Image (cartoon, rainbow, N blue to C red; front, side, top):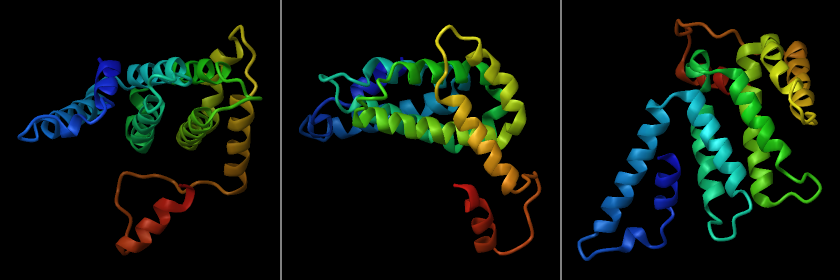
Length: 191
């Protein structure tokens, strides 16, 4: 269903169809449906579906905008990762990321590949920030995969080392005391 919504969102001039702006209405409904999928679907499944779609469509000439739209969805999910981390099967997400990374020819990366790698690094950074060293336990599934990992382990170690040098602020459920601008400054420290 996610794939169908994404491809429908990319119909050329959809927003200009119809005499009474029916196309705009359809586009708004498709966008709203995609957002509801991202918000309400099983988070592990939606991450895996999006990475599988990204792997499938990263080099598609007939759907050049689709990888960018998939990456936007992944970026949207990365922003709520901290809230949904306990719902995620981290091992499955890491293996989907690994499968995506091994599908890229790192010697001849396309713009889509570069964007995909950036979102992977963002997601890995957020997961490591939240899970810290326990991420290594989940990473074992990638270590055991038949195709050797050449990126994830190195990125995880770099992030862990940077946190050891400069620990991220401790997240707690209670709002901190201080002005809104102080709170925004604290939250943006590791963005």
